[in-house]
Length: 271
Ligand code: NAP
Image 1 (cartoon, rainbow, N blue to C red):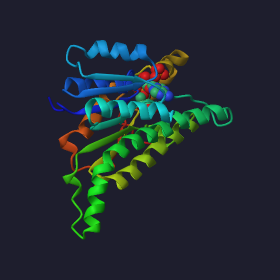
Image 2: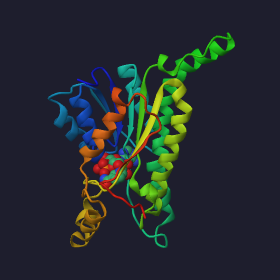
Image 3: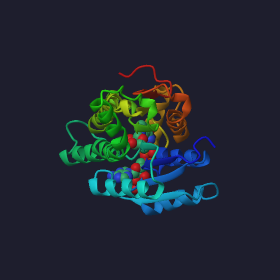
Image 4: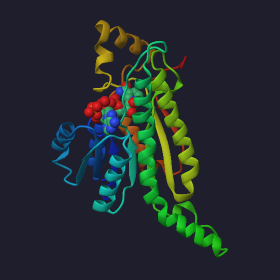
């Protein structure tokens, strides 16, 4: 039980990569907080894990809505006293070429994929740094040595970016948001390590999930074939991403911070 007595908050935890991450955390003994849009989907995850996890809080809401995000984080801190891992997996994909994409779609993708990630980080971090910040400020005032980061509780933030952050035809908005997630990750990693908070991002290539179902079956499997050729290891499963997320939350990755990890399906070229 690798994560016994730990609390994992997973946005987008009702589907795809987030759902598999919830399952793996639950199998490893963690208490779970799921934040997602749809209560029905959350219920189906609850049923799937109820044999081995009865410590489960579900909150419905929109990651781009600050009030929803704050309520979720407050609820978890009230129920469990703390959160150890924040996994930002909620996201949307609405592809179109540069000349065709609507401004409203661009704004919506930014709000969900990028601002949503920021809002959850900010809400958790405000709780996490309260005590360490005070300790550091007091040490400075009293002229004492600043405590080492590892003297504070170990916290992890894992953001789900995408290989599309490197640019992809038809994904002008999506790639912008996922590149933004990498920027957020690098900044948070630098700013927060003094408080013993490690921040990482994963960059999956194409993964089978409800998000990509349409793409994989579209045009008589033309796109499926395209991705299978492009990614020598084929199209991935949510497990391939969840495995890495759990590694980044575990003791094995204790000496890492700010890692941006491609889960690339073996892809050799980004252009
Ligand atoms: P998914 O199966 O569609 O899961 C995404 C989850 O996020 C869904 O439950 C969705 O709810 C939820 N969500 C969407 N908008 C939300 C909002 N505003 N507030 C709260 N929850 C919201 O997709 P996935 O493939 O697992 O993707 C997970 C993450 O991986 C995303 O950030 C995605 O961009 C990234 N990613 C995916 C792939 C891939 O090939 N699948 C590759 C690279 C990166 P509804 O279902 O109700 O809309």
